[in-house]
Length: 175
Image (cartoon, rainbow, N blue to C red; front, side, top):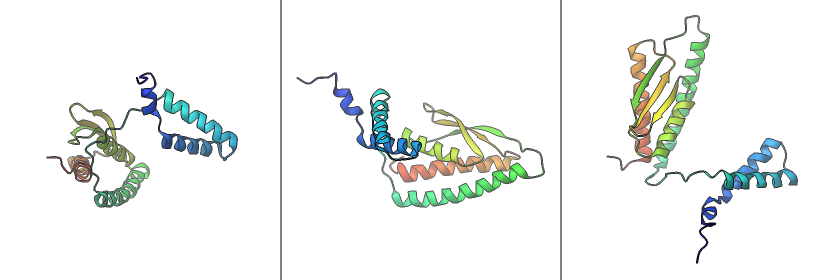
């Protein structure tokens, strides 16, 4: 007869997560001491067992590592360029540009992949996802520079390109 009272605890125990929390705790404290290691372990166990995270929905993900590396290199270049562009918008001697809020579809099937795409989009200066409608696969995007229709279409194209890249990298079996 198995004890169902403790079966959930077995699924909550994630040793590498606890190790990571101990490392983070020691970095936060600024030094590695026996006391900080013990405190990190206690805090790690409390977080893992008292505040369990749900399992990540990663089934059906088949990563194309080569395409992911190429994508990330391009993403870092775009990060550099967007930072310069937003910096120029901040210091240029002109009025603040018009902004826009757009609702755009996202065809990503996996919620984990969708969250990665939204995170990478939010890290780029110039646009922010303000809402995600999981049921209808729609995101609401606030863009910083919407001075004309061409700029809005470029941003819609950037989101569509991000979506297509993530489908190609993570969901190649997508219809």
